[in-house]
Image (cartoon, rainbow, N blue to C red; front, side, top):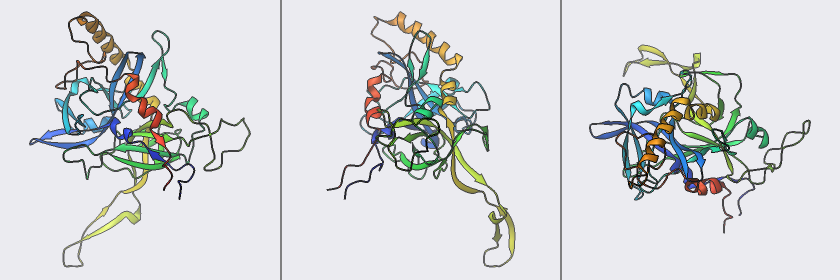
Length: 357
């Protein structure tokens, strides 16, 4: 039997946008959370690569010199890169739970993909790519409650021994951004999605799946689209919605449990156990863009670009104008953030399953 109209199949390239973050303890990688790669296009041959995650993921590591990123090389083997903690930049508003690191991780050495984040328009002007969620794309593609979403990230129960093995989770939009929600990481403007988020998925990118053939938005006053109806879509088949901050918890009287002494009926203590509601909190992309394009990072880019121009002709041209990444790999490869690098992701990220034989 063939696939039903609208059935989702997410392209494997989506898993290549994420890396695992952690620390090295006793020679072993200890996981803390997920991060994902984005790229801001400034010209046909230059882009800025940035690693994005939730700020609490890095802060939970304490006072460390390096944050370690675990990702697969071209041979499919997991490698660890040290990213200097001093090169991580929080959002200009310290209350926003996002932190970013300008990086130069070469695509010829590592198996990675980028989400295009911004595109260059006129000098000193950038605007979000058409597949990043914002007020315009929400209206254009009629994004709303019930729309299907997916996220890729770390399943802390199985990182993978020889290789990183990210997982994909699928859910739906439970609430659009609007009135801020209180989380254990502060009060945030956020989307809520119906997906089972657990430790390890903080920092994961979230995408809205666009059904093939979604039709053009209706005029004001026309009825809402019926579930499964065709609406307009973009070439990518998805919109990058934001980043997982974590899961929502509640405490109720029914969550009080009694701890009894082993082999007796004597109650030793009572504890309130938080309930994972199955609702994940998603920081919108416009907050992430504010962090990636903050003045401090742009200044770093300009300084690095000037240095790059001076070094041209010496056989060492960095892959982007971003600052060095601590103890990371060589930066003499071809630009890892060039638009061609994520063409396949843009064109094939979400597609229907092929009909069964």
